[in-house]
Length: 65
Image (cartoon, rainbow, N blue to C red; front, side):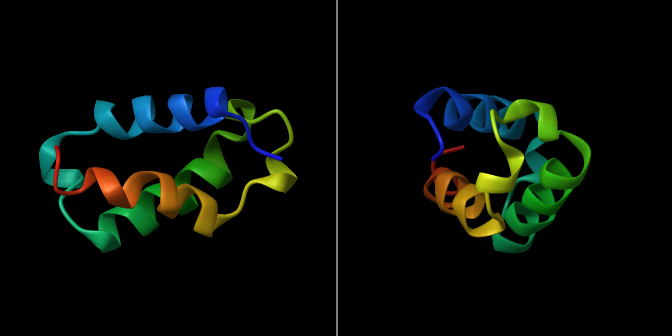
């Protein structure tokens, strides 16, 4: 089970990217893949976090950033 804290860490990572790298859905998917591969330390149990979970957290932010 993922936590609100994990979600907040992922969103913070997303917002650190330059705007040019967080414009559309392919950017979200690429970010999620990279995060799962390179930053498993962001999650209490990285096996519990899926690509779809991260995409679901970030997609609503596309039109607000």
